[in-house]
Image (cartoon, rainbow, N blue to C red; front, side):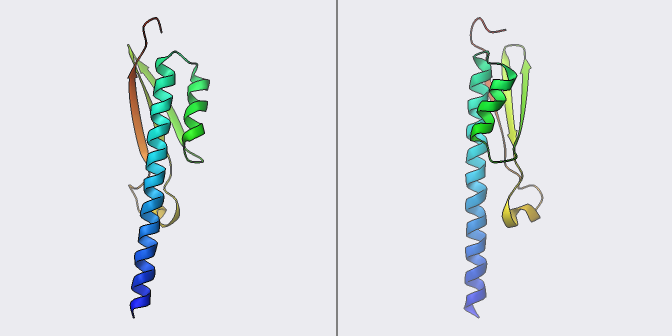
Length: 102
């Protein structure tokens, strides 16, 4: 009787760990992408740097408005977490363009 409970708890813990790792990856990827965009790097380079840190298959969206740039990285939940809506890791980072950058 206790074995199914142990398996369920371990499965939930593993799923939570995967979600946390993916969330950390999309957060780091968005931060690095925003920093590159603030330096005036090309969109292709910003996307390359963000994808390097993001989970496989993540989407990278770059937006500039005035003196601010933002990079959003979205990924699909993996494993059992994919069965539940709203658990897809997503992060947005914003940065002010450095002086001299258009």
